[in-house]
Amino acid sequence: FVRCLSQTAKQFKYVTVDTSPRLAQGVGRVLVTDCNNIFANLAFEEWIFERTHIDSAPILFLWRNQPCVVIGRNQNPWKECHLGFMRKKHVTFARRQSGGGTVYHDLGNLNCTFFHPRNVFDKHVGSAVMAAALNDSFGLHAQVTDRADIRIDGLKVSGSAQKMDSKAAYHHCTLLIDTDLAPLKACLEPADLPGMVSKGVQSERSLVTNIASHHPDVDYDTVARAMAKAFQRTYPGPLPRPAATVPVMEKIDPMDFKRYPGLDRHFQKLQTWQWRFGNCPAFELSLQKRFSFGDVKIHMNTRHCIITDCHLEMGCGHWAADLPQRIEASLSGQRFCEEGFRVLGEQTARDEGESLVTDHLYAWLVDTAMC
Image (cartoon, rainbow, N blue to C red; front, side, top):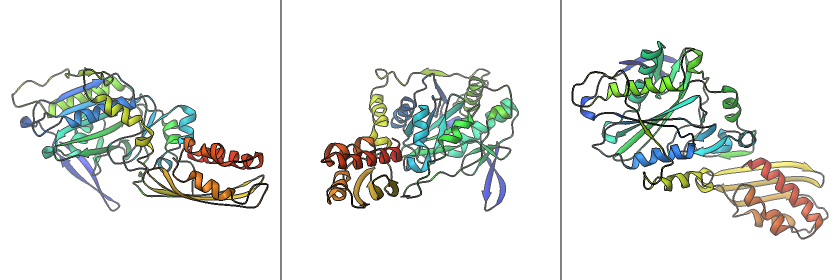
């Protein structure tokens, strides 16, 4: 059993989660990969999920990525992370299929994904298995919250999210082993856009810590083996057998599309602009700035990151009186991104004076969108 922390109002209470062997649920399989590509690993999650049914044995997938930020299915990236900093530092941006909040991954972070039939799914069990592995193998005092997060000394080391349908479910968790916390903080601090009003789920900010700060002799491999051992102890299968001292871990390659038919479909989808940005909840944005040619105010409404309507205010100058209306018309229906803003120069300006205006507006909007 692992004691779990439940928060009610500002008081804490402990509950228990049963991590004793579940003999009837089949032999737990542990899959591990050396692939560090976020899109491939997220795609493999979906591939397994599609093939999980009511009689499936539980699966634990262990994986990690090169530096990236992963937002939840229903989140607005401009409200969750600093896209400009990420672009400069070559930190990949991804949107996952599950809900929940935004997380930062690097090679010092272990991801654990637990797959179960829907009828036996309990997200707290996966987190409790992870906490048991940390406590039993490293002598830590890891606790699980009612949100299925894991904390040590009150600081968060693991966040989680889940996805389910009528037959299957998965619960995936981060685990900060030795993550570089400086870029984590910089990436998860959104740029200042006070004029943006957005729907969607917003992340809850927490103070975090690394496992390595509490136990100096841990690394990715030792923690991964501890997770595998704890998982197979919880799911040993129906036949009595001695507890394995060395866990059985199956090596897989999420980039092997021939071995896993249909995997490439998920891999390609997760990288598209339509998925990463087009899935953004509706938002409206108001901006204003003083240029050499005068003050400009612009207001946009978007749906699926497409500008549905646009209103521009600018003073008179060395351009035709209908330039603001032409800018509004050209931006409406375009993507809220650098590609969409190119219409300002390509379709709108009629002379050098108007080009000066549209070039400045283009640079301003690109700097704002940062994508």
